Image (cartoon, rainbow, N blue to C red):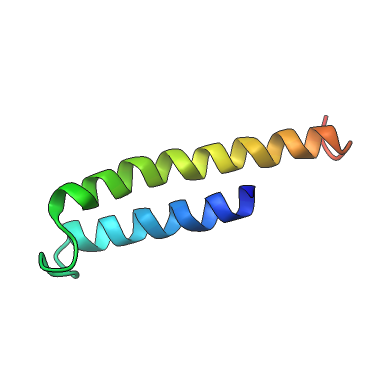
Length: 63
């Protein structure tokens, strides 16, 4: 699940940045959706990283 969060968050950030830089037209993604994609995508990637860290500690892989 944490890997899925990383992938989805990364894609949201990538698409948001591409839209805000003008590589994706307004007809496909609005500016508001792009801003939400960057914000929520960043949070999702961070939460996925935290989940992987917790899983690593629970499995004895971290200190």
